[in-house]
Length: 265
Image 1 (tube, one colour):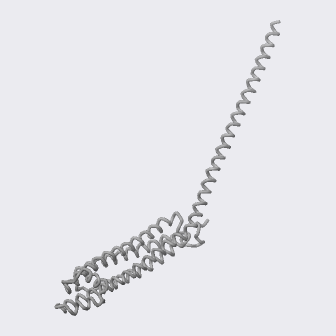
Image 2 (cartoon, rainbow, N blue to C red; image 1 turned 120 degrees about the horizontal axis):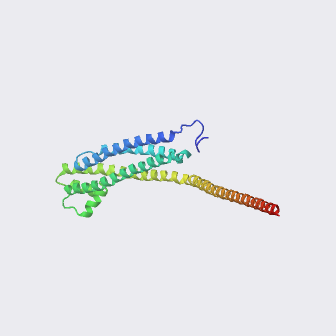
Image 3 (cartoon, one colour; image 1 turned 45 degrees about the vertical axis):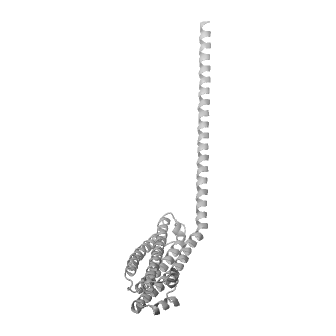
């Protein structure tokens, strides 16, 4: 008999093999996240360092996420993914994928916060007398006139140009990562929708399992009752046999006594 949801001739280890491949791909993405974290720190520590590597690596990571989310969705959409044999491993890779996405989101949030602080410091190099409001406006949009005006009025034109270029590059990198975060949120929803689509099937399986359990309990109860009744009937038969034997013994004893009395006469 074939397991539920598995066609004849199908590889019974197909789901588990796919999960192992997803695990290996997640190991690779975690390695890329380690590199991204290292680059984030280098860029923040060196204001003159270009941010192009961040953009390239983040694009590679997003490509990996898209492929893995599609793959996990396909795994979870298969009926056999919910079998007792496969469900634990499928759940594991699903959770791990979400954990790596969360890690990327955390790294991005920290880099955005630290980059904003670094941009504020660089702007104050150009405009040491800038107010907090001017600094905030300049950091939010490095292409705004306020930054250009600061550049033109600065006595440190070369340093100002370098600061402007670095701030703009980081700003573009952050904007790209923010767009990716929106896409990752959608990928999260896609994964959860697969779970929601499978809930009726899982609920039906659980209901059938409960019905089978109830039927087994009921059958055991009926069998137990039948056994008890059979034992009760057997006990009654033995009592009847014993009474019959006692009656026969009494008749024999009475007959013997009568014979003895007649002989004495």
